Structure formats: structure tokens, C-alpha cells
Length: 276
Image (cartoon, rainbow, N blue to C red; front, side, top):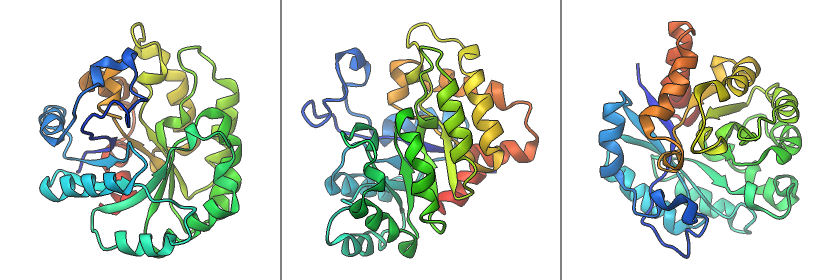
């Protein structure tokens, strides 16, 4: 049974490009490369990973695809192209030539236009993904969940996944609005969700496993083990917890699932979703 980390990042740190990594996050203000991650995955019983873009450029696509080509444990890449570009079809056709390019992502959470995903030019780009077998990772904050139903229902043949359970306000223990919106969007069967990035939304210094249980209850009830997958968000998770500590929170929660459900959550769903 494969065990897959469906969400992690690599970068050669650049303080200008990576300005989102502020001084509060100094622990990750450095390079993170496959040689750093592979022993961590092995120590945690993880067989492979999906490398996700952390910079919106095709230069990073080339960087990640190069790493994936040289490291068999990197099973897939989620890259970036300008979905609103006139030549979007040409770019998708180009990247379809790379076996490990599995999907695309745009940093919607950082956009001034909170409903950018619903704009015609963006939706035009999304409409081309299924033709090339690409998935789409939805990176948003909770205020943008209100747009997701219209977005994913417009493209029933495209596979979507919400990153980081849509970043609920765990630190502030706010859950009601997020929970209502998550349950609504989960009704769309082409939408999956990554159980990832939770520790960075909690109190970095003082979180405890119990803080996450209400949020895990919601996503497991809404999506079921059929459409959830584990992701570490390494190395970003390290601002709040090391890999083993972060993973143990989820392990403690999933221990009561059936063997089949655990297999799906820890690997099979990622393999199926990203065609690894």
C-alpha cells in the first residue's frame, strides 16, 4: 500500500521572491531540496510525495520537474501556468509532455479579487485542464469558499482538491461559518480535500492535538475517507511542528478508520487523484 505525502514544497530561498516567508518564519528562510526531505519521509514511512509550486512562474515548473526527474520518490508535480493567458492551450499542451506534471495551482488566497476563480478568463483556462488530464489545486482562505460550488460545478470532468482544508481559523477556534461552507462544497463529487497545513493555522507555539479534532470531524464527515488525502505542507509546517509531530496529529485521528479507509487516506486517494 503506497503512503503518499500529497503536498510539500521545494525551493532555493530567495528573500525577494519568497517575501511571504517573513522573519516570524525564520526557521524556513533557507533552501529545501530533495536531500532534506527524503530521509524525513523514510523515517515516517512515506513512500513518495507530490511537489507543489510555491512561486507563480514557469521557471519553478522547470525546477520542480527537474527535481522530480532526478528523484524517483517525487511522484508528481503541481505547477503553475497563467490560466488567463491567450496561449493557455499551448502551455498546457507543452506541459502534457512531462509525465510527472500532474496538475496546476494559482495562489487564489493572495488575490485582491476574492472571486477571481469565477472570472471568464480564469474559467476559460480551467476549462482546458481535463483535455490534458490535469487536476487543479484550490488554495484559498475561508472567505473564498462561497465561490467554490459554482467553480467546481462548472467543470464536472475536472478533478479539484482544496488545499489545507481551506485554512480555517484554528488559532481563534472559529469554526461555524467555515464548517457550513465546507459541507456545502463537499457535495460536489469531483472535489477532494487535503488534510494538510493545519498546524500553521493554529497557535504555532501552544497548539495541542485536541485543537484540530473539531476541524477533522467536519472534513471527514463532509468528504469521507474516499475524497481526503494526507499532505504535510513541509517545510512550511516546520514553523509550528516538525514532520513527525504534524503527522502524529492526523495518525491519532485516523487510527479508528477501517484498514481500507486508512489505505485510501494515506495513499490510494492521492495515487488516484493525481494519476501517480
